[in-house]
Image (tube, rainbow, N blue to C red):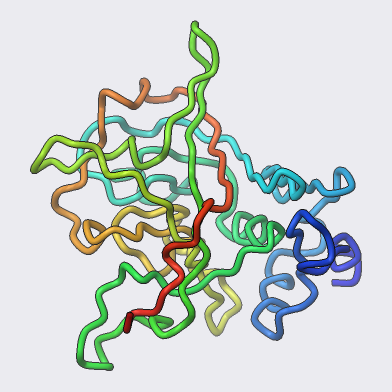
Length: 251
């Protein structure tokens, strides 16, 4: 793992970029790096990286990766899935690996954690594993595509609508929950293919903080905002301007 660690030069707070040192963070982060592999992260500039097809600009604090439209109508539980994931209920599909997005988000200095939007049952035996972790950092997610009139970019939540009202989801940031490694060293999101979920999924890399995420009956594709199936797009992720979601379940 020496070569991989050598690429990650600047510890959090040592530069104005918020660029992270992946070599720190204890056993969990070390296990993550082992699972990623030494060749997955390539340094492409003073503060830029490529992680398995994901471009990371730590100076502008921005992540970009390619995807394509998988479906533009029907019930939706996943905004972005990996190939082989839940294609029957995902708007976008991408060839990137979920664990590579996790590493890319760490490179921006962001930390995964619990989703304050998760419902926490009174019975501890029924609570999602990891519910008591600190809330994960928030990100804003944008979908960009080329049109005859030039590039067009919209927020990810505008791709979804509440079927009961016909209105698209309210403007929101999303939570970097981060999936986890199981006893075999397998990253959970690789099992499901869920990269960004609108229906609460503890194994997804990014999850929906809204109460609507607790049910899977009412969130549909906002067909008017989604181009034809097969259209190439780019997903752009940046840290949310305000970390209003940094609260505990008890607050």
